[in-house]
Amino acid sequence: MKKRLAALLLAVLLLCGCMPRQTTQVMPKMPSVEDPAPTPSPTPQPTPQGDAARYGSVQLLSEPTVLVSIYLNDAATGSIWTMEARAAAQQQVEMAVNWLTEQAAGYGVTTQLYYDDGSANSDLSYTYAVKARLRGGVDSQESNEFLDEMDALCATVDTEALRQRYGTDHVGFLLFLPVAGTSFTMAHYAEDDLNFYYEYCCLYRNDAYAAEPEPESPATYAHEILHLFGAPDLYEGSADPYVDGELTAYVEQTYPDDIMLSTYAADGSNLYTSIDKVISPLTAYCIGLADTCPELALFPQLADVEPGVFRYGTGTQDSWLDSGAVAV
Image (cartoon, rainbow, N blue to C red; front, side, top):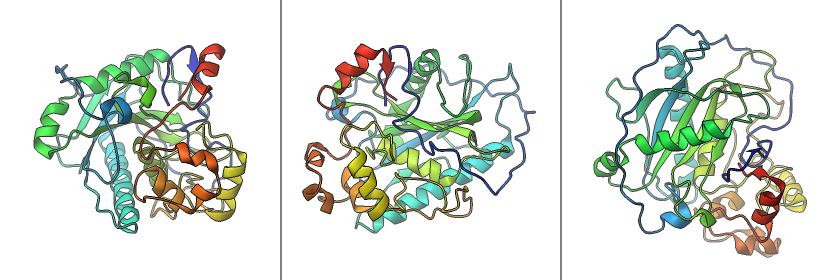
């Protein structure tokens, strides 16, 4: 999820939808006629306290959490967010949050997720003129300069004011990129201590795998938001240390509709009117919605899982450092 050295690890850890597939729904191209709004002003932030060194800025889904939306504009290339495009993305966020609320309720957990409601005076929505070049694409290998800029950007938002208004220390960021790509999340690792404290999802305007311009789906939004709360990828190729081939094969057979396995419909298309996925008992355990799951008795490596907390795993961090790669 986050360790900077040279390049992204081909977006294999927190990327959603890593296999090309045929799509059936074609959406219009995004217009690019709106000027970017002023950037947020730097605000001194307090030193994180308590469990921050393990969890980062977002902890468990069962706890109140604020999600701040930031729309990135690249006026130099005309890749910007219009009011119409922002409104569409906001609706996707609302659908994702409603789905998360319903899924958590199925495990007896009441969520409190505060997010941009689309109102003109919302304090949970910003625009920002990005300086680093946006790459996008299937691999979504955004530069270290971009990631550093996003770290700094998240630190400028007056999170203390948000804490005072919403009564919670838990703040995550939804960063909207106005190009096609494969969405990913930068999450905090326990070994990072207070480094990379702010956690954020990078949500692309369009799905890079679609043959024609087609927005990312609300299921993709929900998938990435769940990463903020500690949900691992459960598909083949996941780099989470306790997700191996045997576990992914088990999930494919036992929980084929788990949203951390895939966000696409059975025919490989994106759905925009609903999210036809579930949070399985395994994912529920990983994010703290359940105290246990049947898989604990089947896969010994899951005994090392601390709900809501990402760790590099024994020996994994050293091997990545030696290879010069970056965990995403």
